[in-house]
Length: 205
Image (cartoon, rainbow, N blue to C red; front, side, top):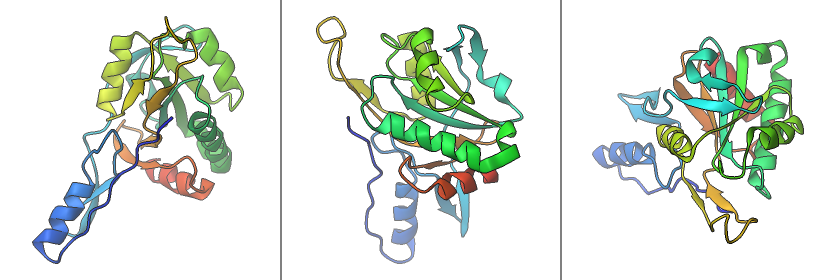
């Protein structure tokens, strides 16, 4: 499975520097950069995230609005993922533990990009391996495509389930941090230190 990374370009002084920084803030192959530099200030990108309605691993339908008042940790992946998804969910669980009592003000979401295989029951067993605070979400292919677009997430299945039941899915590999109002704060790499994710989440609270 391929994890998409931001690409970095060189910069020249003055206008060229600003153009390069703004370019770095754009979305490339599904990976997003957390901030842009405008007038000397680091400003969170506002174009990441949005409304959704999906099916939770307990079978109920949930909307993004029900998480307002809490920060959100959002990761997109799939239960058959061999590497980055287990790493990411383990790191999310560690971040939640490191937050202590503040974790009660955070909702962690694992959104499946493989809705053909990831049923609510399968998600329930999967997220339980990492933390009871992680909510698995799935939906129709149309619903998953819509929420992936809203979060600027790249994903692509390698084969059809009818011909290869063990197919893999390429997808972006960042954890998205949203504030209590559902606004984008930034991302962290699942392989980065726990302190990195914890600092970002505290900024969202």
